[in-house]
Amino acid sequence: MKKQLLSALGLSLCLGGGAAWAEGITFNGFLTAGATYGDSEVGTQDGNINNNVEFTNDTRIGIQLSAEVNPRVDVTAQLLARAKEDNSDVVADWAFVSYKLTDPLKVRAGKLKLPTFLISDYIEVGYAYPWIRPPQEVYFSNPISTINGVDLLYNAYFGDFNLLIQPYFGQSKGGEALIPQEVLPLLTPPPPPGTVAYLDFTAEEMKGINLSIGTDFFTVRAGYLETKVNAPFPGIDDDDVEFYSLGATLDWRNIVIYGETFERKIDGVANLAFPNQRGSYATLGYRIGKVLPHVTYAQLDEYDQEPFNPAAGYGQALEQESVTVGLRYELGSGAALKLEAQRVEPEEGTRGLLIGDPNDPALDDPSKSVNIYSIAIDVVF
Amino acid sequence: MKKILMKISYCLAIAAFLGATAAAHAGLAIIAHPSNPIAGITADEAAKIYLGKSTSFANGRRVVPVDQRQGTRSHKKFYKSVVKKDDRALKSYWSKLLFTGKAKPPEVIGDDQAVKKWVAEHRNGLGYVDAKVLDRSVKVLLVVP
Image (cartoon, rainbow over all chains, first blue to last red; front, top):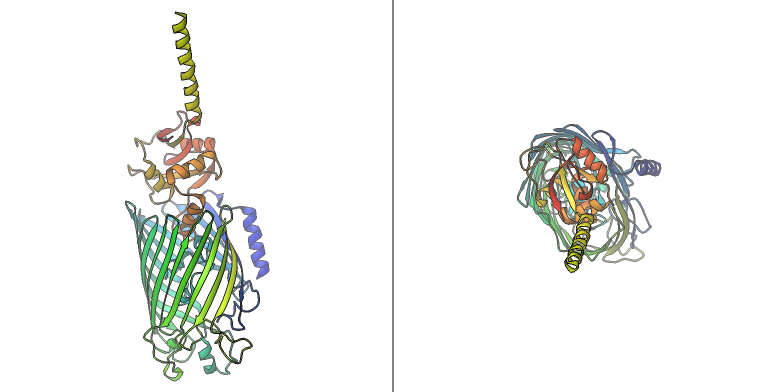
């Protein structure tokens, strides 16, 4: 993994950014290098943040190739290597062909990034947003990040306003869902608590829409997604999933605001892996020259979820709240340094998004909350 | 008589000085191909084109904008006075469009001379150059003082 990242980095630095290799072909890239540390024996549920200094959670590099076949047709591909992926292969995060029907209307086909939330589209490009990672109380909720299918981009400008209507249709194979800690005892043989394990799943008949309206300094968006989930686990067969999301962002006179909320409902045994949840966050920041300090409050709740009952196929809804304070510092052109400190507090007797209960009396140093410290450098080239 | 002559030459000297000064700070010219029938362009229209929000001139003709290298005087002036976005805001703006495959920033051609040559050779071209380098090979759509 390290070797791949280093050689990809070396190659990209040699080639330089925005280079045109040949008439109509361009190359661009982005990179994040990050380190994390949590102050409790209890770390995050995917095991990437714990009480050692780790580099896996946020480190990644992406390289994008774009070729104009003719004035109407573009081919774009993005290769992504993430330190947190188990395999050491560079994956094609997305690759598609786009055809311009009329000036505001494009149709795209291939492997597309799923626009579930405000920054989902460009979530890998750390440089494009203030935090090191977007609030997980919202962003963890959809494990599907790309869709194999088709979308329509109606992207029109009316005076100062930009309207985007983006319906999409497709499927996702090779998605992986983190098996919740509460479900581990159901596996045979049951792995010990604290095991990080994934379940392969497919999402079929995915259909949804992303709508957004905005000007240069604010955007409001809404999204809806429905799909059917299948997994090699008894009973997870064509289970219905519904996702609603709403978000807004403002960047005006150095005031920076982000806010989002979502609701998801999953029927059937898939509810064990994906319980019904609702979450939201609000971020407020103020830019002073090269520095952007910001604070975020986020919350994750159950949403119309039955109490935990594995025999009946009801999963454990997770609840937590967190407060994050962060600083983003512009390092010259196309690079930013970020520092963050987050206090995570699981609620309602659940473990939140942590791997266990940090207040467990069996721990050396039980506490109601966990503090996570992170640092990262984001670059675009 | 001598007094008048002195006054006239004094005025001419001042005029020459002012003229020279004005030429030295001639401003930024937004240019297109001479065959383009369009009469002119507003700063707002140019900004929209350079931000990928518009892909045609006001007369409907397809537009291909080109950029100078970051760091040139003209690049700094264009983005400060016409597009009105600082480097961070511009990079952030393009990150969100480029890395989502939605739009691409204009191709980078080089400096004033390179842009002038390119626009003179491309029917749909649009560029910005220091007014000092202007000649008949290109058509001026707007001058930004």
